[in-house]
Amino acid sequence: MGIDTNWDALSAISTACAAVIALGLGVLPPIFRSISERRLATKRAHDRLKTVQLVIKKYRFYNVQSIKQDGFTQYQYDTSNIKAMTVNIDLYNEAMCLNALSEDLSGEVKVTVTETLDLLVAISSGFPFHSEEWDRLEVLIEQSLNILKNRL
Image (tube, rainbow, N blue to C red):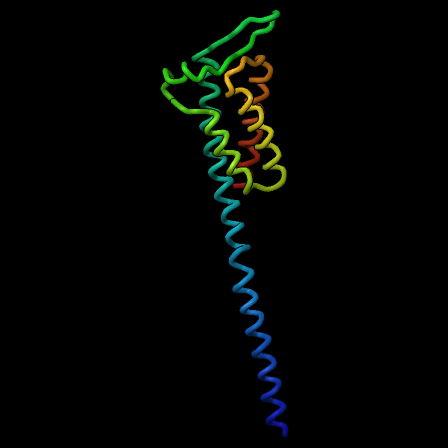
């Protein structure tokens, strides 16, 4: 009778261990995958934002399309003139790729990157914007890069 009890206890323990292992094998891989996807999205978003930052600075200072209207200076992102730059990039397409990457980001990072993307899409639409908006875009890109760099 004592041997049966020991076998029953051993069977219960082994069943519990098997259940914990099965649960771990079912739950842990998606958790690890989401962590690695978030880290990869952070790295890719950082790299793409560095490229966008380079294009914005290069475009604004070396390929100026300024419009004076009502006493304000406005800058225009001219998509036909962008082909003459040594760095040829479609900012709207980059913004869409960054938007897809931002879905995997978390919390504060996602909010800052999304705000940057909203302004980037508006500016890359081809309509003229005040120089303050361009300054704000550069500041937002810098903030986003700093936050992403801290998350890496």
